[in-house]
Amino acid sequence: MNTIVNPILRGFNPDPSIIRVGDDYYLATSTFEWFPGIQIHHSRDLVHWRILPHPLNRVSQLDMLGNVNSGGVWAPCLSYDNGIFYLIYTDVKSRKGAFKDTHNYLVTATNILGPWSEPVYLNSSGFDPSLFHDESGRKWLLNMIWDHRKGRNKFGGIVIQEYSVDENKLTGPVSTIFQGTELGFTEGPHLYKRNGYYYLMIAEGGTKYEHAITMARSTSILGPYEIDPNYPMLTSYGAPDLLLQKAGHGCLVETQTGEWYLAHLCARPTVEHYCTLGRETALQKCIWDVDGWLRLECGGNRPSVEVTAPQLPIHAFKSEAEKDDFDEQQLGLQWNTLRIQPDASWLSLQERKGYLRLRGMESLSSWHRQSLVARRQQSFRFEAETQFEFEPEHFQQMAGLILYYDTDDYVYLRITHEEKMGKVLGIIQTVQGQYDELLQIEVSVPDVTPIRLKATVNREKLQFAYAIEEANWHSVGNEIDIRHLSDDAAFPLRFTGTFVGVCVQDLSGTRLHADFDYFIYREVY
Image (cartoon, rainbow, N blue to C red; front, side, top):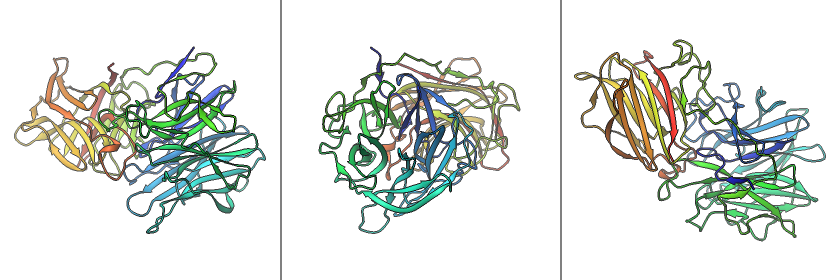
């Protein structure tokens, strides 16, 4: 019998929204400040998954210039009705302090591969929006509502409002249908209709180790909603030995064979409570009990690593190649840029065939224009390697290999120019915004010569190395503790995960470029 092994989407892939259309399963996850927006994965057996082209791939759909760290796209909701895919998402502009600026939009497509429409603005009252298609043909938008007032519950409940397809806007009254339980942090609503009941699935407990899923139901879409007497139906809280922690924020799908599966958020600590891979996606098989409540098939409310797969034909996909030689005209689907679209003003795969050319822009502190191309870390142990050419003329010009969480936390093996030594190699580390240079004496490297750089990660430890062309590798500095590259290392809470990639900075404004010949990402088991 085939088995689902969790997490099904490793590395930063949180807030899953899953649907089935015919024999195909599609699962959307949050991308926050990384461009293009929203990851959509495809499966035909719930075991094997591949990434599809991102739906939010132009600035007119998603303009994140200046968005805060862990802002951008939160908790998308993917749905399908009458030949049309609907995708709802939040673009978070600010999130610190009392207020949150959270703008909710809708795009549509007749093909999951696109093109996706220009966005329709919905509201800004809260985040985690979802769209419910009632059997009557009416459509309803749900979202949590944010209450900024002093002394109030910031998570002010789940609200619902009708959406008019003809008018492309919300219409009618806004109704609060659920206030949550004592678990608090009521968010992530999804609505389902089954056997005369409207079932409301919500995330509670916050997206840390107390995270959970609660169910409620009503015979009327507007409530009142009865809470599952055995809530939460899923949580890892209180079970620190489980491999899958932070279980919560879920979405249901029914197979064509009548089986039910719950896609949910989870995380795996690298060491202690630090999750450098970010929040991931897992699947649990579910049943409906005799009283009509959703339960895990395995019993209890704890997530399982291994789950019985549905009775469907096995459908595997081609694996991603370890090495990218940058021979294509566009970046591969594994690559992301930070906040901005990869356009010819700073990124080119054509100017020098077989190379990724990046023009240096702003610093690693910028929320605006960084010249950075990176991919998710998806394994506790991996090696990343690149070869590039870069001829800096002064200390404000830098390029190299980076492990990046956000503007406050990264580790960067970079080439720059020093007045006395010339071209040098050194390590920059920023921990919670505090800048440091880790080598007392930087490494002198020759001019006009390709340099190879490598990062070797073993759980919470990172070792950098370099080589001149095809010569042997030489370690650079000591092992570096990278626990700070995690959701759990800072306050307020962050929501992404570690990326590894290449970048260039030119703080003088002359946009000096670096040419990257290849990039290797190799997982080590």
